[in-house]
Image 1 (cartoon, rainbow over the protein chains, first blue to last red):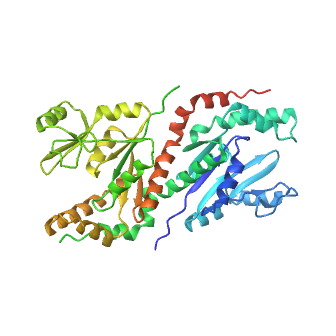
Image 2: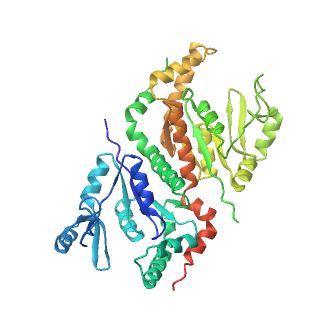
Image 3: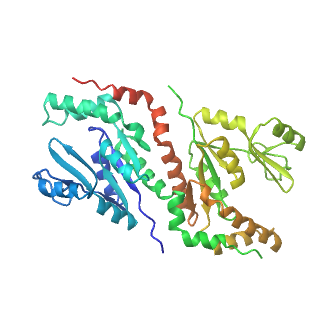
Length: 210
Length: 210
């Protein structure tokens, strides 16, 4: 039996849209989908585990991988490197598993260049008030940091038109249903189904004429 | 507020795939979607109601409408005419309602030429055995009629590649979930959402930089 290649989903959102909670809720439904774990050169925080939150590597190792073209997309944020393993993505897709990449619009563009069949999903907060409130509630941030986050959220929202689907995250349960439906509907795409049900379609196409 | 144009869904299947039951089940979920009622020149059967099953018109009226280019697609089957009203489709889509058209692959091609954004869904039976059984169970048909149906099913299945989605109708409940998910996911398409949530996106794009 031929394995149907998995779909590569990208989910992006401005900070404060609730994307992380949404992805967590999706994974908890037991959906057959693998979350891509990025490589990073930044040190692990106390609550973070290697291989679960990130693959933590030294700056030297990261730069070597970068030089060897091992990343599908990579970015430098506040002096730290982040990247997605090309090899893992390729192997996982070929094995028939769907993948979810949680990256920003810049990374999304790099991935789309390599995998044009990528399915992009953009998550928006339900209102400006909610966005501002969510950004202010992150207590550790200074007003300047909040200001920067708002500006960067605005910049990111400007890329919404580059995505295939848009989810408004007003109610988490509803947004989760939206996300599940998108993932499921994409598995029903003709090009996927013709591979998945190849023998059935061959059999049906040979319906005997009595 | 701008109305988001509705989606135009086409559902096609070989005879025996269970499409009619599936569409009936979908409409019974209370989904906000209008089934297009075809015009036909054939006489109404006892159990059929005008305006519910078809718009029954005389051959003369049908031919006049055909001449006045009132049909989005039309076909002649066993001497009877069938056609889909262009005006109704246009008005319903503009009003923001989704439409479902139950037509064959020939009609689908005509509709796609006029509405390239049409979403095509093809329904397949789970196996050749099930297809043959379903066709044989239609007691009123002679062996010759069954043979013709099988041949025409085979011909229709050859068009599966012209559709966007494929549903395997093994279990009606599962197929119904598939169909509902496709309709819902298509409503979350970026191009739809940008119109539907135009004021939200404008507001979010104007996030003030403090």
